[in-house]
Image 1: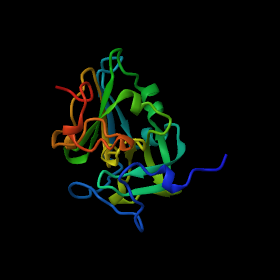
Image 2: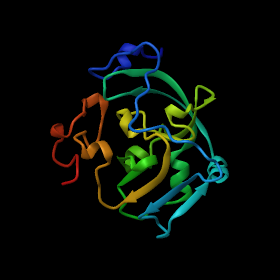
Image 3: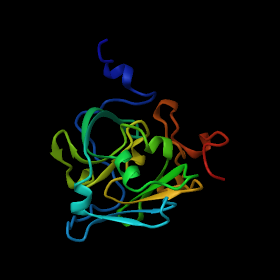
Image 4: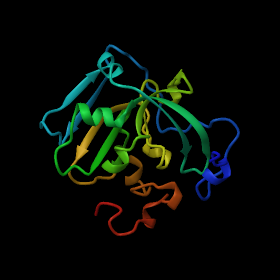
Length: 202
């Protein structure tokens, strides 16, 4: 069966731009490998926080994922090849406690995005370190950014520093500022006023 065209892969309201636009909130942080760490905390199965140094995180299993990228500002970048640590590898290394149904992905400067555990634990969700066989550039999230390609790109947090397991859903940075709690581009879930009952915390 042939691959679908870009047109059939575009969610409603999206367009393919020239080039690869870069959008982010705040300044670009400086990467210092000797001081960098990624923490997994909250409702872990052990009840304890686990912290990965840069060498430890770099040693986790890696995968390559080809996926489209849909920004809530309506552009889509098609056919990106992301390389990095699958979310499943982090869940295996630090299992969540029973009852965890959401995670909060934390980036530099307190930026955050909440994601349902089912979305986090998909085969295409990963912590990217490479884009098209090259290390991520600083403005695209170097050294590590989350990629949750089936949701709008604000869920794909740049400059990741922590993952928090949640027993109760909680809105992240843009969700608190009026974005949809789920962010499915095929449903055009852009804004909180569109939420149906059960799609967001009270």
